[in-house]
Length: 225
Image (cartoon, rainbow, N blue to C red; front, side):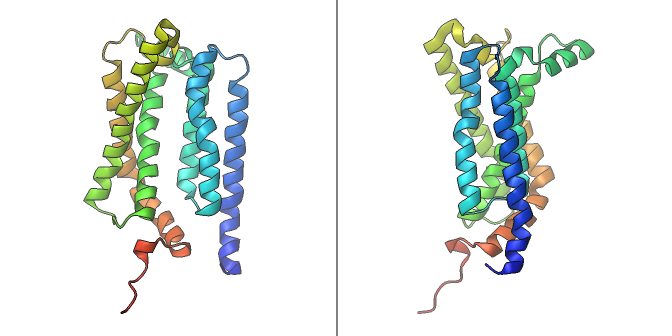
């Protein structure tokens, strides 16, 4: 890589380490006297397992600045929910008092993020590891894959309820809503659709820069015989 390219990448690398440091700091803060330790571990496990993977990908293959920011925001939402449990997050309580809602809807924000952020993850993976070009099929997969993940997550919650019984109530956060699982998947659908409609163009510009610096095999011209 030429010196100018390295100079252009340096601010992104610094920003990535700042984002990782923020995630580590928020995770550590969330571990200070959480409302429920079981819920904390179940929620924060995604951050603990995901952060090393993201750092490794960023160092070896590169990652867009947009995805770094989105992953950081998602980690913060998870850490807040892990500390308070989603049913008792103060921000959700304030919104409930202001709107007169019967439940704390911070978990709805979490499931919106569960669709919004994975839509960009899916887009980045597909653009960098497959021949799928921008267009209708890419948009469909950006929405379908996060919703599929959301449905799998609901099955994980179901397994937790079966195995842990009432100990998993705080983790489930259904707050007595019999349609909670359906609402969660619907929120993920809304989030994925919103990300597809609003961020695709900007994300494509950032992906194009990464592809020029490190093109995958399917982007290389075929060899002549």
